[in-house]
Length: 120
Image (cartoon, rainbow, N blue to C red; front, side, top):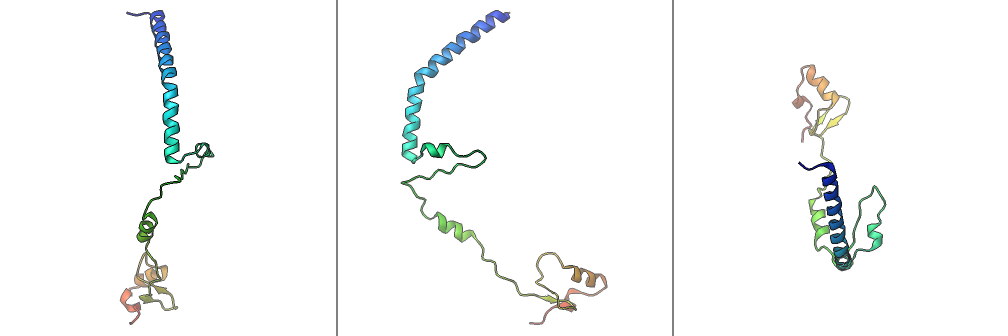
């Protein structure tokens, strides 16, 4: 079995090798990063975004075609729904969602929803 001193010397040797590899590849890596920054229009300011906020990269040359139209097409236009039921005190309900308290109380008294339906 290896003892602690042998393991520590192996760790030192591996650390030296890692540092040598890092120093050899450093310049190449920096050049790759700079090339990608230039290709995507990324500036140093983009990389220094405030903490707690997402970074937004805005490419100068490329624009997504059709994205705003696709987002607008997904939105549903909501228009008010005409009421289907009218309560004794003039309250109305469209028939969508939970029953209002006035309707629940009247149904509990033995009435039906159809008793309060608005005639078209």
